[in-house]
Image (cartoon, rainbow, N blue to C red; front, side, top):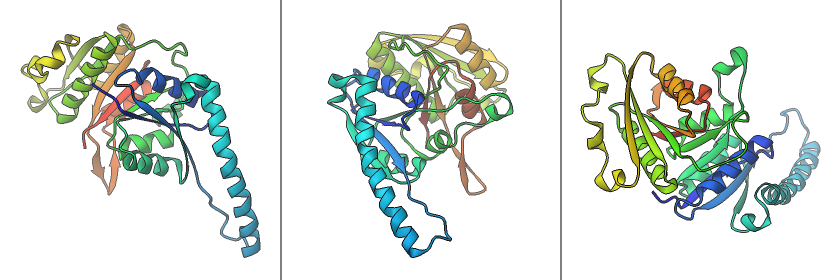
Length: 279
């Protein structure tokens, strides 16, 4: 697998710095170029007068120019001056999720790497709103990291991929194999039986082209039970450095939503999750 373009949206937080360091680590798979993006929008209150709007818009434009300089400093401080020289910078006037989606499409990105804020208690039922929208609205694979994950980054050697008999899972397995081949790692493919014959896999090995299998070690594991629970449980047992899962977003009352298994795995995984969209 050769990654050529990696998009890393940031908000100047420690979490987005972690995502940026992951992006740099992944550039070795194909000598990829990173584009770091910051998105914000100008949205004045509806009751402002025209003169107030002009003054506020002038302040926003000044802040927008300041964001470009701040983005450059953020990248240099996070990656170091030498690594930062090859990084592209984009400041986009848009709501974050909209800006990320549009930029990923316009620049034909191969991967998006971004942070998603962890939640506790009842709030853990929900992802960060920006990450959730990106996951369900873009067709580019998305790697999400959370703040409680390890700050010391090493190449992923132990990769867990969840598979069922769907095109999204097949794409996820191939991407996991490509990353394992790049970093000299091992892929564990987990199939959780769901009492659905259409999702059973007769021969997982047949999914893998010979050239892909020759570049990585593949282990197969089969379990029964709730898919999300079994995936997260095995990720903790291994432990894994990276979890790869295929997503098959579907329409629900005119909105695109993630399947419950994918969403729960992204929320609760102990390691970074690479979601491969099956649109």
